[in-house]
Image 1 (cartoon, rainbow, N blue to C red):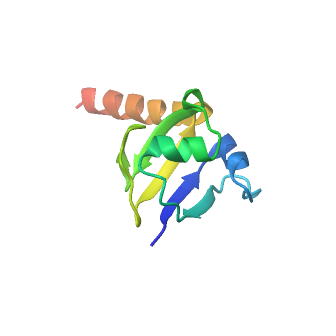
Image 2 (cartoon, rainbow, N blue to C red; image 1 turned 90 degrees about the vertical axis):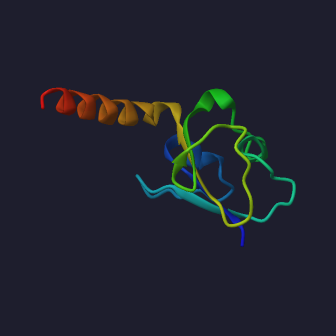
Length: 99
């Protein structure tokens, strides 16, 4: 089973055949025995660390050094989508402080 990688936002353009449907990520199925970490995925698609805001592996917030294996699901979000997550955290903390 391959590693499923989803590239969101501007990162979609890094995919060989990127999804031009606005708002939809590009989904790649990688069967590459040389990929051991999330960082290896970035190198494969020429994505710089500075372009990444959030990384998820199997729906858990992760780091570049996170090991990946066949069957894993990796989501990569660009810097310009980072505000989405900051806003959610801010809204939730504000909501919780009013209780």
